[in-house]
Image (tube, rainbow, N blue to C red; front, side, top):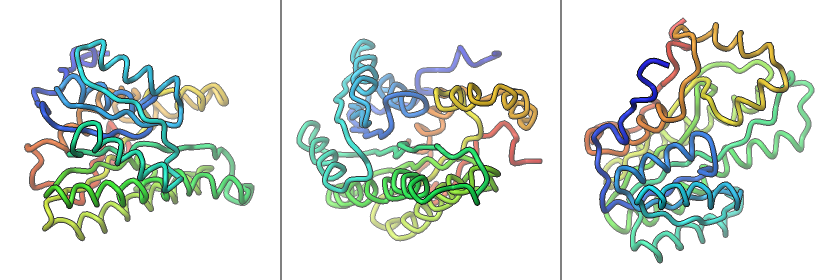
Length: 263
């Protein structure tokens, strides 16, 4: 695809000396973000429930000359999230940036057919997980005098999601959490923003297409640019939001959707 393979490592941005924590970094968007920060000189903490995938991401960063630590973490468990942040501090000495990307999407049917267990799992990972991560990240960032946080919502946090109502509700909640926290801590030196991509070429999207092959053509048609985003394109936006170039950007939902929400 034109221009995609030539994306710069970090758009000219340097994060040398910065410590970055990325959740859900074992694959997909989270992995792309972790790799991009690693290429930009950051010390990266790769967090995920997947041991194999997490170690693989950390290994990729190290193989490319970067610094990385993998920590297994279930973001729905307060003790594990607290331990994740503490391990980051103990290993690298500080926490400058956090990208809360861990999420699940296991809903593919009308709202009336969703069961209680599915509702609870989606809300626990997508909403409680982000809340817990911010809770413990903010405490450390406030103690050191500042930082930057990026949460992941997707366009499901901005518009309706037929057959994904609970998932859509969870992502709307992430947008609300982000805006409220951004307003609360703006004068404390912490900026908090949220990324809202549309369809991105990830294992999660691949699984959805495998379940329903016909959905690929429909999804691409819904994107004016006629293609899905590359995970690296989302990573570039995450790095920009965490950089000094975005020093006055706070409480913002950044839409990266190829025009999906423009029509």
